[in-house]
Figure (tube, rainbow, N blue to C red):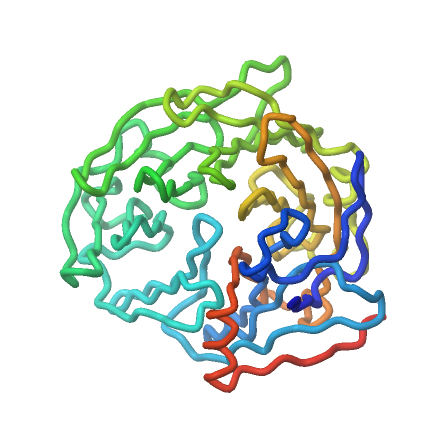
Length: 380
C-alpha cells in the first residue's frame, strides 16, 4: 500500500541508482526498496497562528497527478508552530505549551507553560520527557535555564543549566539538536563552532564539550546534526560563507568524533538550492537577502537527509539517501517544493514548517477513523 505526496513534482538523480517512486513508508513492507522520503511540510499562517493540513513530500508516480492527505482541518492554536529534531512539532506561549510527536501529528498535548518564559528555546522529546532549554527573554535572570516536563508524573522539573560556553548562543537559532532513541539523550551543537554537549534527562546533567568540526582545509561556516537509521549521528557542514559546498560526515556515537565523510552535495544541486526560480523568490530576496548558511535547515528520517532553505526564501529541497551499511554509498536528488504554490509566498504572514514522520498502517487507520480524508490534486 502506498500513499503519494503532492510536494515534489519533479526530481533528478545524481550518482548511481536512480530514485524510484515511493510513497509514505508503510511499515508492513520490510524491503529496503520500499523506503520513502518522509518529509512533511505544514503551511503556517503566522497572522492568527493557524496551520493547515500537512503535505507529504515524495516524487509522484505520475507527473500530472498526485495524492495528498488532508490529515486535519485548519487549526487555531496558541502561538506560532515550530519543529524540532526532525519529528517534534510544538507551540509555546506564556501560559501554554502544546506539542505533538506522533507520525501524523493527530494527537496534541496541551500543558501549562514552563516557569521561565522563553521566545526561542531548544525543545526536545527524549522518551517520556520534554526538555526546554535556553531561549529566554532579556529580562530573565538565567539565559541558560533548563526545564523538563515528565509525561508520567505531569510535572515540570528544574535541571542543570546549559554549559556557560553556550551563554551567547543558547537559542534554537544558533544551536542544532538531535535525540538518540537508543541512549535516551539529547545532543546539542553550536552551529557556528561545532562545539557539542549531550544532556542525560535521567540525571538532569550535561556532558562535554566535544568538538564535532571535521578537519578540513575549507572553513565550515555552519553545521547541523541529526540521527539516522541505527542511531547513526550525522554531521552536516556548510562550506564557506556563500555556501560553496555542503558535506555530510558520520560521527562516532561513543567518542563523538567525526570518523568518516559520507558525501558531498553535487555542485549543481548547491546552486539549484540557492537559485531564484521565480518573481516570488526575487521579491523574497529583497526582503530577506541572498541565502546565507544560517538560512539552511536539515531534517533526517531513517537513511534520508533533507536539506533546504528556510521557508521565507524558497529554493529546492535536496535529498540524500545514505547507505545503512559500511559501503559509503550516497545518492543525491532534488525536488521542487510545490507547497509554495498553495500559498502567497510574497506575504510575510505565511511560511512553512518542516518535519519528518514514519507512518504505519495503524497510523493511517487512526487517521481514517477520525474522518481524515485524502484527495487527488492535478499538477502542472
